Length: 413
Picture (cartoon, rainbow, N blue to C red):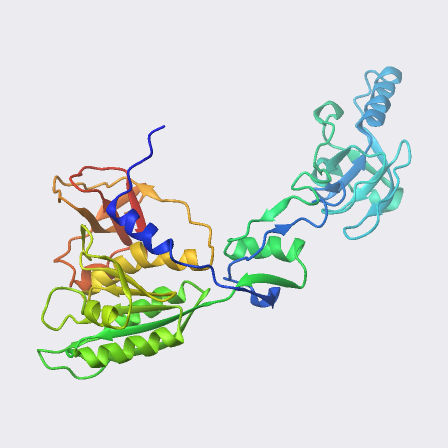
């Protein structure tokens, strides 16, 4: 069997993930578990449904009994054309123990109510005439008995899942849908992975705080807010520190060491290229760290760096804003997910509706907008074009040397 060749991006992610350990679990109330990552699988503590229940408001009957009664009615009054009447005996409410169906009778039943013993079909309420229901105790069938089927409108015990089967795998992110299952089958408390502690550092003497007046040679820091917003969408992370770092080696070393001491992961922006003031690789090595990868064949984001100091991971993301946003998603996020044991999301692939013939000898992440059944390219002036990124919904991953409509792997912001 031929083993698929890893791309340089995949190899870099795999290399850094190979030195990552899963963070410890903690026990929290399920009311606080939204967005967290399950540390253990959740098993069904009982069948679901736990009893045969009605999927509709209506009337529970023994269909065989009803069809016999109808046949007898037709035998004695073949030309009467009179509709069949049901004698109602009892009401099955949701949340109440099951009743017993008396032969020749029907039981009124509400959605979620236990199907009475002896019943094997639920007639919808709208398929009956209930005009005289409370005066005579009868309802009239407004459809033909032969149109009814055994098991109709019944949700059978265990048809969703059986007791002891896995409801949610370890590594599941507890989102809206998973929370419903967790509340149904879980206990009051649940084991989740503790939150990843992350420190953000932005290097660059030219950076100023958002909202400040800036000179033409200065820029407002956009990477910090971008990364904070990205991480806010990962509720299993926690930002424990954020600061700017001056472009000198001693300052950078002090900041990295302090961040490493306080967090699981350090994410830096800027200072990882080949300029005279790009000190981050040197600082990591002088602190006893190991560079796991540096520079990948991608655009934007080629200077991206991954390293470790002990069991702490450091990402050096390029300073250009589009590069920062792209490499955070493509390179950093899979590693963060490994830290908490998160199940990898399904890959999204969509066709490019306005494909051109442009190619690059490296992986090209191109900004896109969602457009009906596919995506469209967004005009961009490069990795510093925040305006084009603001107008995009994400980016498409175009492999080296490729062009055309794809479909291509798509990442959404």
